[in-house]
Amino acid sequence: ADLFTGAYLQHQPEWALVAEADGRVFGYLLGSMSQHFDWVLMRTGLPVATKMLFNLLTGQYARHPRSGRFVRWLLTAGYREQPKHPAGAAHLHFDLDTRFRGRGLIPRFWGMYEQKLLAAGVTRIYGIFFSHPRRRPESVYARYGFTVFDRKRTTLFEPELSGVELVCVQRELRKGTGASE
Figure 1 (spheres, rainbow, N blue to C red):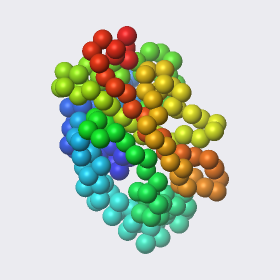
Figure 2 (cartoon, rainbow, N blue to C red; figure 1 turned 135 degrees about the vertical axis):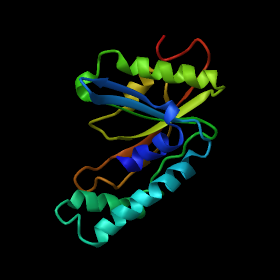
Figure 3 (tube, helix red, strand yellow; figure 1 turned 180 degrees about the vertical axis):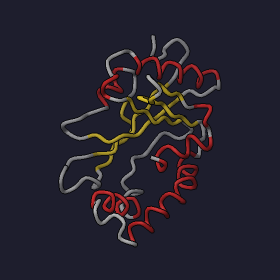
């Protein structure tokens, strides 16, 4: 989790939105306005990736072959399997526990985030996620005005699951067109 959330929480925690119930987090939207987010992500992720590599080399993933496979993918194919993303756009990372979907939380999260971005003068956002033939998150994003910017096939889940892609979606922001409207 630190690999994917650390850059946001360490460098721009003021852009984090968190939903909780009974003291447990069930959803979040993490954002970054940095135009150099890829570099922030790599710099922040380097210590985590180094620890993961050490664990791989010392056999600590022997009982977790999927974790070992993820580390090997991350250090070899992961970078070249990333889709392109729009230059100068803010970035978001979003997740919501399936038990809380369909309750209007997605448009509330995105609406609050977009209002903050517009107030800061940002006019475009993007996000990247995994997609495959049985689960196409891009259809959910499309309901909120996002379009596919780029997609790239990934080998991360092979051979168990083929046809997986990393998809970059983006959305132009204009006053009066927020996701919550």
